Image 1 (cartoon, helix red, strand yellow):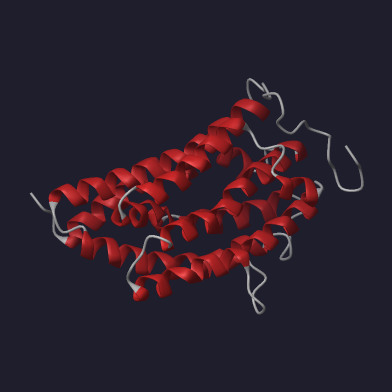
Image 2 (cartoon, one colour; image 1 turned 45 degrees about the vertical axis):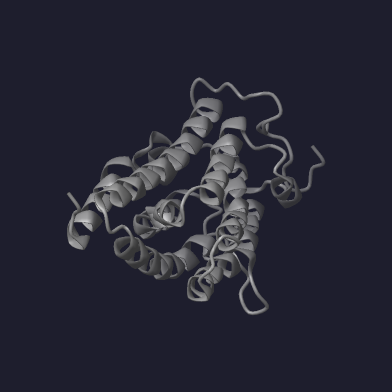
Length: 248
């Protein structure tokens, strides 16, 4: 039976309440000040791979869209991350965070030290958006429904617990407080309009679950490699290396 738009929205929001990565132990460790400097650096290095892949994902989505109105609405997401003449962009802001935590920004930008599981999870998300239906691709982006809360908590926790945290280093998160609600308002309305059968609603919900799994998997990889059992895979970043001002 097809749910009403309000009922379906409640279903989507419940997915976030149960599965969003703000509940992951690594986030609790990070926001409470429990991470070592190298654990913070590992998070910055690995999360950059996700940040840098977002505009690639969005470009793949737009390449499949015939509707000019949908392309116009979606392209601001690419500009928000890649930047424009007037807007620095999220990728550049993330590299400022890398500077602040003391890791070499060129190394971060090279993506060399990313954990295999982080890489696999993000690449799976890009493929999902490229290959699945437009409805599923848009629905997967709806983790942004839950993002402003985690960004606000992250800003508060980092400012309270880490010396590197200030308005400059945390500018990525502050900008997302205004960018994410704009994006999700459009995406949510589009999904509620186009998920007009029970089958489409199930597919959209499954897409959102998939995306929460992508985010959770990245934090599982970080926790296993740099917290416990602290097994760093070959080729992934090693603590103490590639710091600012050092060659290795």
